[in-house]
Length: 113
Image 1 (spheres, helix red, strand yellow):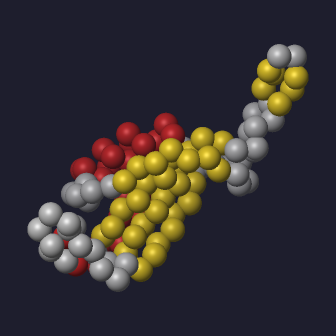
Image 2: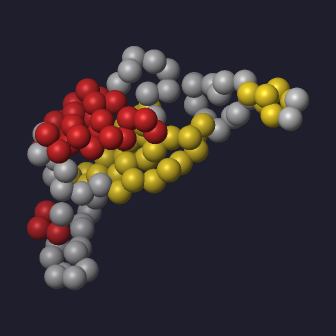
């Protein structure tokens, strides 16, 4: 099993959810609002007469646990759903998962997904 973490633009979350559903990969996902700093720079804003350039931008982090054989399909679905071709589209991180346990039923591994 793998854990796929994806950091994306906040306005692309609904596109991601819809694409995962259409691809049959919507068994579970955890979503968090995060702040990030990378190649995408913030836009200058005026606040009380001061010019401010934000250094941390709002992003969304989605975490998905999936079987090894579906990782490439998932990555393709994510990229096709959220890519704009602009700086700031985000990143995908893939981690190995040793085990998953569903607390209620004590199922383990793929059965717990």
